[in-house]
Image (cartoon, rainbow, N blue to C red; front, side):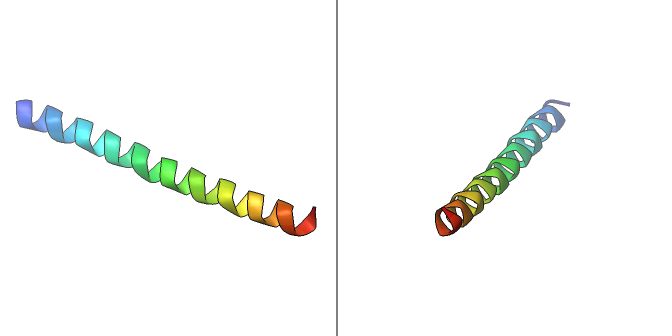
Length: 38
C-alpha cells in the first residue's frame, strides 16, 4: 500500500514536470515568433 502511494505521487510529479517542460517550450516558441514579427 505504501509503495503504491509513493509511486502514485511520483507519477503525479513526473506528469507535472512533463507539462511544465511543454509549457516552457510553448512560451519559448511564442517569444521567438514575437521577436521575428515584432
